[in-house]
Structure formats: C-alpha cells, structure tokens
Length: 224
Image 1 (cartoon, rainbow, N blue to C red):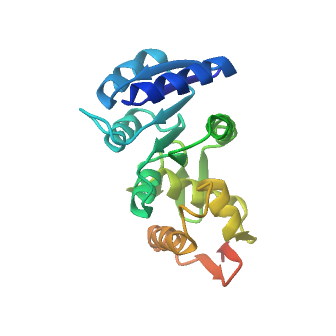
Image 2: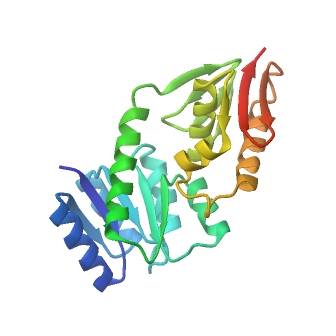
C-alpha cells in the first residue's frame, strides 16, 4: 500500500482529499503544519509527501528544506494556491518533484502521486555517475571535483543525470520540461536556460564537458 503524508491546514479541504486518497487505496497521515509533519515523518516513513505552502508555525517551503536535510529521496509534491513563477521555481529548487496548483481535481493528484512514486523507484537503480572529472551522487544531490563538492538542487541533479545518460544525443526542451516540471505553463523555456547555465558553471573545471544549446530543439552534453 502506497503511504502518503499529506500536510494541509485547511481542514475542510484536507478531509475531502484524505478521504479520497484512502478510498483509492492509499494509506494517509494528515498533518496541519510543517512542525507536526516532521514528527509524523519520522514514524510514518511515507512513500510520497504532499505539502501545502501557506501554513502556520512552519510553511511548506521551510518544511521541504528541513525534509531534504534528512531525506533526499522521498518525492515531495507541492499542492498550493501559490502559483507565481517565482514560487514554482523556488519549490523545485528546494527539492520538489512536482507542483500542483489549486483548485485541482483529485484524479490529477492521484496520477501525480503515482508518477512521482514510480519515478523515484526508477532513479534508485543507479545513483553514482562519473562525468568527465566529476562525480555525481544523484541520491545526495552532490557534484564532486577532487576534494571540492557542490550541493545541487533536486532538479539540477536530475537534469544533469538526464543529459549524461543521453550523452551525445539531443534531449528535447519539451521532454525536459514535461518530465521534470510537468506543465510548461509553470516552467518556461527561459527558466530552463537558467538551470542549464548553472550546470555549465558547476562543470566549468573540466573544459572537455560541453552542454550545447541546439536552438529550438534542446540540449546535448558531450565529453571531448
């Protein structure tokens, strides 16, 4: 049975969502704020976490930051009315796997939860990669060059992994956005360029590694 930690302070909404997920076959634990959620997390050990952002005592962004200090793998889905581009980007940078805006349909939430769970199981198959002079730990989101180590965001690590796994091939922009950001109305191609620029900077100590922008198509990672 798939276990879901659901964090939402609006009790009427929480009751509807919790009942729907249980009816679908999930085991659900509900917390009303981030502080309570951290306590539940230690005992419940969920497969997926669904977090609101605007909550008392500890908000969802702060909660996600605390979670990622102790758990780099369990998927986090934000379910929130905060849908400005900067909010969405911040959510992904904090380690979210998905970002769903309110109002929403319960069927969409269920599909997203299941997809996040499947994706995590797939990622666990391989976690360590040698990329030129660098070593990527996709479980801990770290990129090492000799004794120096850079902490990546969840999305930076996943994007670098995808580019390396498809080395010498063009990875379409639409595929990246659809796979890692779900809905391009949230995350634009221009925002993706920012992520690519960061990754290039991280890899700049090895001049053999190139990430080329194929205009209008996507990106290609090569190692000369």
